[in-house]
Length: 147
Image (cartoon, rainbow, N blue to C red; front, side, top):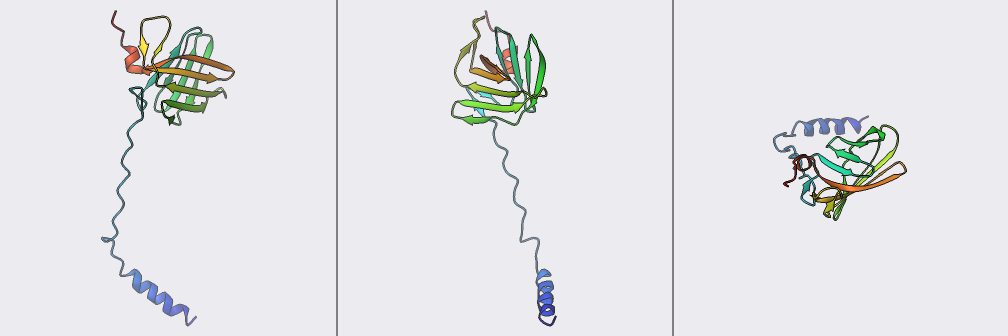
């Protein structure tokens, strides 16, 4: 007890010398810029789509929404993309317990039914299906191409 008491008193005395002004909080980390692939800002809504069968995957900051004419809509959380070179990959599971993998590749793509050219090629794996198509920012897709 004799040894503990002096150490305790010294600790309390040193604690009183602490100056909070000397220890400044660290600055918050700078927000990282959203990834851009093929000129498409992946931080903004992106739509991948294909034909035969008609399908689409809308990629929002929070979710991936898969639709297909002959199947129910499926939703999955967006955990972010893994980017390697010219490929961005989203891997998640839908509300119907199916694995959903979306790969966006920075190569121009034509949907085969129009004269429109998209900046990204898309490959979607959902359940046992593998679908190929094109992708672009949702805002670019919503704009009608010039005749």
